[in-house]
Image 1 (cartoon, rainbow, N blue to C red):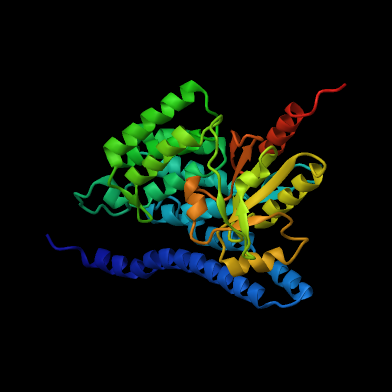
Image 2: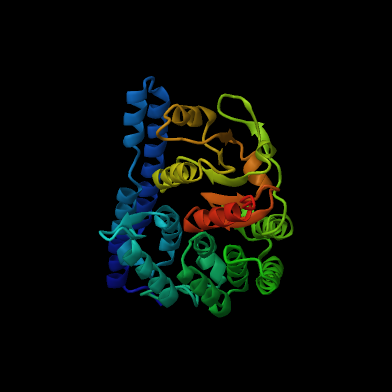
Length: 381
């Protein structure tokens, strides 16, 4: 049977529009990254306090990049190609918050995130949506929709209760075993932020076993599910609540030697961060607030930063910007000791370096530090 000429003409007419949107999404992502690189270069070139302050204030606006990406993908959320830019979008906006008139704050892009979850649940949980014109294929779902594993890991890093519910639906309903395995891995990664009680630990181990059996060879950004699951198992064994955290030894941006154990006896917030994270300004503000609040207490806030050493050095020259000591870790050697997968990440350690909190920087860091300092107060005479 010959393909109808009028359908062929229509297909040719629509081809440029269909291929332009993925290219536009890639262009938004690349442009934002290039602007960050240019900003870092300008910051390194600044030689005075005023110039450095001006360079920092000109940091590319992640909200503007998010709006550009949304304009490209928002009308095509049912299409499987949008899953990868959606993963980038969630990582970009997950920590962006807006202060409300009453002093509280909310997610800046809450409505957009809600629309993403609804679209993925509607069109992608049970596999790729049916195309407008049926195209015969024998490809498995993973090859039809290779971006879904990337999206699953973006959900794992997203501090939102809805992300866990969506991952559980993908794991139970998706027709492809390999994608269900990736979703199992993502759920295990997400659950580690909810606590360390025996029930959760058992569930995480079961999910990791499923991920390894079903999806070991699947690669996400060049890293296999087997390797990611291995790191999660290491976290369960050595980096869970109550475990003694690894000591860190390295250099600051000076470079001068640093060692985590030099702050033995203090409550320590160990903050893994870099200037590329969208909420960098909020992270630095939070760090400054914690240091001021607990200045008279046995407390230390120590950063592990994987920017180029020169970039970290320039930021540290602005005392109003970076107010705390930092390990310089551009090769991620120290970050690997803590198996950091999502940035930023905070650990709260007691005076014996036992872990009491591990998760995104936020209110729970302050609450945990306060509780530990209360416990270590000297007894009243």
